[in-house]
Amino acid sequence: MAFGKPNLGSVIPKDTAFDPALVNKLMGKFGHGGFLGMEYVGHGDDWVELAIDWREYLVGEPESGVLASAVVISLMDNATSMSIWTKLGEFRPQVTMDLRIDYLRPSPAGERVFGRGICYHLTHSIGFVRGFAHNGDPDDPLAHASGTFIRVGDRIG
Amino acid sequence: MSAALSGLPPYALALDMRVVDEMDGAPVIAMPFADKVQGRPGFLHGGAISGLLEMAAVAAIHRALRAKNSDSAIKQVNVTIDFMRGGTGQMTYAVGEVTRLGRTMANVEARAWQDDADKPIAMGYMHYLIRSPKTQMPSS
Image 1 (cartoon, each protein chain N blue to C red):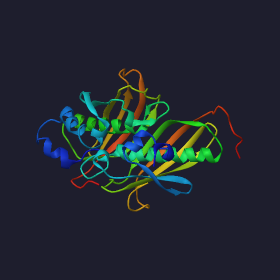
Image 2 (image 1 turned 45 degrees about the vertical axis):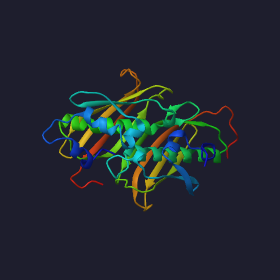
Image 3 (image 1 turned 135 degrees about the vertical axis):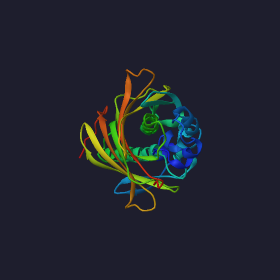
Image 4 (image 1 turned 135 degrees about the horizontal axis):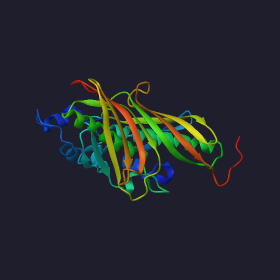
């Protein structure tokens, strides 16, 4: 689920453009993002790319060493969530409404996974997102994602 | 419970998930609240909830395959997660239900809840490909 106002609102000064690199510095150190070792890779006007290194404790299929499917979900959840703030140019509290992932192929054992989240449409309340995961070559995706985030007021959860 | 006994992979064990119960023949998996499953302060990260749903779905399908004496392997094709409530700082449970188990694919639904089993915090809808086994036992 997306990060809410309480933590980020206090670290992002008001009237300052949203900075995905800064946010991920915090996101990748604590909580679930820290557990996964999520890192900022890059961003554009409406997209953010994050990455997670393969780690043995993130494996979902011991026989093959393939990462747990939820590692890709977390990666795409964070990348798409941040793409909304990036497109908007500022932080707004929101939560994930739904997220769909299609697994085109497994992510091989030992390979770093990149997740690019793209916000393709924004309304007052909803952020429409899509994205894909890859192992370093964006033209060879391993998963596709699509989902929606809903803006929430000061009351979240 | 060891990994071999619980059947849970490293990812699940790293998040301290364990099988705690059974519902309608499917294992119930529990995940305690901790910093490593936290998103915004005080709340579960959606990815951790998704991970719990995934483990419950996989456990349910393995159980269903075993009930049919099948040694087929599974491969996940896709998943849709609906997030319905914020997960708060307490124990979270999940159970999977195999809604259809065919020769080539399986449909699975998984549900996660906290203190009230009637108020799910998230639902997962998964499709799995059934990989043809090396030897197929006669199924009922």
